[in-house]
Amino acid sequence: MTAPIPPNETTRLEALHRYDILDTEPEEQLNDIALLASRICDTPISAISLIDADRQWFKATVGLAASETPREIAFCAHAILHTEVMVVEDARADQRFASNPFVTGAPEVRFYAGAPLITPSGHALGTLCVIDAKPRTLSQEQQEALRALSRQVVAQFELRRSLAEARRTVKQLERAEERLRLLGSAVEQAYEGILITDADLDQPGPRIVFANTAYTKMTGYSAEECLGKTPRILQGPATDRSVLRRLRENLSAGESFAGEVINYRKDGREFFLEWQVAPIRDAAGKITHFVAAQRDITPRKQAEAELMESREALRVLNAELESRVERRTAALHAATLDAEEANRAKSEFLSRTSHELRTPMNAILGFAQVLELDETLGAEPQESVQQILGAGHHLLKLIEEVLDISSAESGALPLAVEPVSLPALLVEVLNLARPAATSLQISLNEAPPLSCACGEVLADRQRLKQVLLNLLSNAIKYNRPGGSVRLACAAAGTTGLPMWRCAVEDTGPGIPREKLGRLFTPFDRLGAERSRLEVTGTGLGLALTKRMVELMGGRIGVESVPGEGSTFWVELPMAQEHRASTRVE
Ligand code: ADP
Picture 1 (tube, helix red, strand yellow):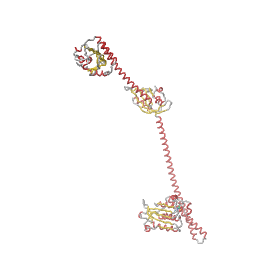
Picture 2 (cartoon, protein in one colour):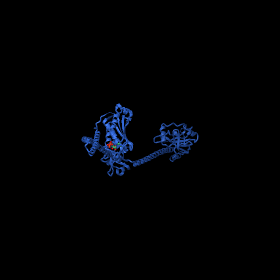
Picture 3 (cartoon, rainbow, N blue to C red):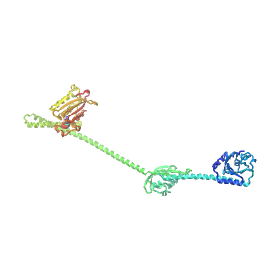
Picture 4 (tube, rainbow, N blue to C red):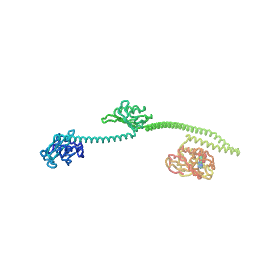
C-alpha cells in the first residue's frame, strides 16, 4: 500500500532541496552513522533515505546495493509520517507491506525500523532505517539509539549546509575584496584628486578619511597630513563665499555639488579646482561619507586670463588704430581742402597774372607793329623789331595758354557748346594752317558727307578750332621738309555715344612709345633728344587741347610710329539731330 502524502509536502520538498544533498557523493560521516545504526540494531542492512517527490534516494547504505527506489514502494515514505521510530516487526504480517515487492521478492524484507530525519523547521526529509530479512523486534535502547543517530544525521545535514553557505560567503567576500582592490587601485591611479570625508557637517566640518595620490600631488600635503583634517582649511580666501555656501547647502540637503573653488597648495601657491562632491549612503540610505573629485584647472584658468588680456589689449589697440585712422582721415581731409584751396589760389593767381601780362604785351606788340611799318628804320633796327614781334607773339601765346589752362583747371573756362558743322570748320582751320606749311603738302579728305555738309558735332566752335589748329600746327612744326599733313574725319564710337572723329596725320619723326603717356602733361616737350627738329613751343598746347576736348565731352588720343609719323585724333559727340552712321573720310 502506498504511503499517504504528508500535509506539508510542498514545504517539506522545498526544505529537502535547500539542503542540496540529493544525488551527491557518499560522505564518510554519514556512512559511519549508517554503519553505527546497523551495528547497534544488529541488522544486516541500514540506510539514510531521503524521500523526494517520486523516489527515495539513499545518501548512505550498509548491505544495500541500490541507490534509489520508487517512492510508492518505500517503507520510509510511511516512516516520515511519524515523529517517532516506526517499527515493522514482520512485514508479511503487516497489511501495508505484505504485498510490497521488496517483501515478496529480493531482498525479502521482513523487519523494518525507521527514525524520521526531522529538521529544526519540523520537516521530515527521510529516515535513518535498519532492515532485516527475518522478523524481529527492537529494544527500547536500540530505538533510542536509532533516534539519537537520526538527529546526528540531521545535524550533519545542517553542518553541510552551513559549510556550503560559509563557502559561498567566502567566495562573495573574495569577489568583494577583488572589486575593492580594483576600485582602490583605480582611485589611486585616477587623474583627478579624490577625497573621502566623513559626513559630519557640524563645525569645523567633515574630516578627511582618504586622499588619493593625485590629491596629495595636487596639494603638496601627504596622505597622513590630510587625514583627520577638514578640507576647509585648504580653501583660500579668494574663493567666492557664495560657492562655499552652496556647497554646504547642497550637502546638508543630501544633494551633490559641482563648482569651482580656489585652494592653496602646501607651499602657499594658489590653484584653481573644479570640484564635484557627492554623498555616499549606507544600505539604509543614511549618508555616511562624502566623496569629492577635484581637477586642477589652473592652466585652463591662466589661458582664459591670458585670452582676456589679449582681447583687452586687442580692443585697446583697435580703439587706438581707429582713433589714428580718424585723425589721419581728418588730416587728409584738411590737406585735401588745403590742396584744393591752394590749387584754386594758384589758378586765380595765374589767371590774374596772365591778364596783367597780356595788356602790356599787347601794347608792346602794337608799338612794335607800328615800328615795323616805319620805312625810315634801317635794316638793323628793323631786325630788332622783328625779334621783338616774334618773342612778343610767343610770349602772348604762352600767356594765353597759361590763362586757358588755369581757367580749365579751376573749371572757369567759358564754353559755348552748340552743334558745329564740321565741313565748314575743317576747311577754315586748314586754310588758317596752310600758310605755315610752306614746304609740306597739306590736304583734307573731301568725302561726300563733308561736301553735303551733314556732319555736325556738339562743341564750342572757337575752342574746337583752337584744338584742331593746335594739332595741325604741331603736325606742321614736327614734320620733315617735303612731308605731308592730312586732316581726316569719320564717324566713330560704335559702342555708346556716336562720335565724329577728326584725325591729324603727319609724316614727322613720330613719338617713342614710352613718351606717349607724357604728351598731354603741361610743359612736357619730350626732351632735348628731339633737338634736330627743335622748334619753338611752350609744351602747353597738348595739355590745354586735352582739357578743352574733355570739357566738351570728347576724347583725345595719339598713335605714332617712330620714323614714320603720328596721328593725333579727337572724338566729339555728334549733334543729336544730325547723328548718322555714314562714314566721312
Ligand atoms: P609745344 O608744341 O608747344 O612744345 P605741345 O604740348 O603742343 O607743346 O607738344 C608737346 C610736345 O609733343 C612737343 O614739344 C613735341 O615734342 C611733341 N609733339 C607734339 N606734336 C607732335 C607731332 N605731331 N609729332 C611729333 N612730336 C610732337
